[in-house]
Amino acid sequence: MQNRALEMEVFVSIVEAGSFSAAARFFSMSPSAVSKLVTRLEKRLGVQLVVRSTRSFRLTSEGADFYKTSRAIVQEIAEAEAKIARKAEAVGGLLKVSTNLPFGTHVLSPLVVRFLDENPGMRIELEFSDESVDLIAEKTDIAIRTGVLRDSSLRSRRLLGSPRHIVASPDYLSRHGEPTRPEELRQHACLTFGGRPHLNTWQFKDPADGASVHIDVGGRLVVNNGESMRHFALQGAGIARLSAFHISGDLTEGRLVRLLVPWDAGETEPISAIYSAQTHVPQRIRRFLDFLGRSI
Image (cartoon, rainbow, N blue to C red; front, top):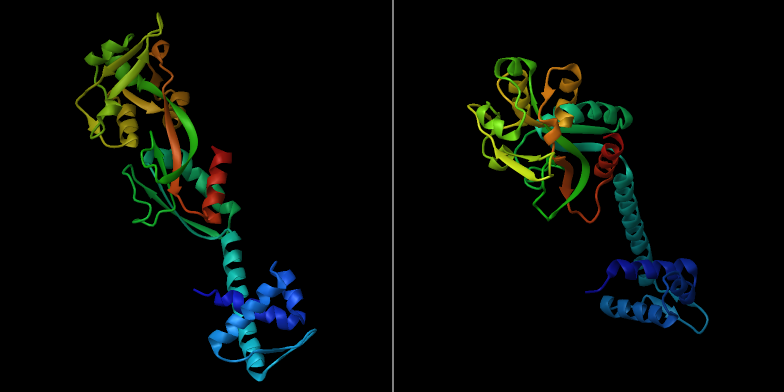
């Protein structure tokens, strides 16, 4: 298939530069290659475009018409490319972001306000959901999720690793006492997640010998998101395991108390921003990811 746009560009360059050799230098081609290109173009069109002599050339009337049309097309192509390039570099437009409820509520929401203040040309559609999201089908630019990422077809950027803490409210502890060893959790009301059994196995580290200890916890109250778990923990409904980013204010204000601190295994919850593996990531996505990287 012929590259007709290139043929037109070369032909316009020959006319405007005044020689085949000047056009050849501009396109990093040999003069003979430029001459063959014009010959091939004339053969396909079925007309003579250029009358050549040893040191010069002149356009035929068909060549002049072709030059005029080609020049207009080449200019339109250049303007179209420049327009797209300007749009790609401009930080503006709509950014659709999906985030789980705890991170969105306690970390992302305040940052979004600041980001919009710093980027007046942008809009953000923020969706709170703990469910997995199909970025392409749901036209989502960025999804922020916790835990190990399993979809290798997506790009990701690690935002932070948040320590997990075992906590309860002072009210719960006053009524049920404080566990001093992980196995005592089996006698307590622990708040658990439905549909994600791996989150209901809590890891500890024996302070005496460093051995790993895993306890499968259970209770009478099962929830499907971390924010609900935090709410019920604050109400004294049971013992919970929650990320530090989620409950740092509650710990500071004494609304929740850390438990089994000597047995802390140092477990962290990875939090990442995921986005489609595009060849060229739009500027609005890059800007938001860079902002999160600086701010969290």
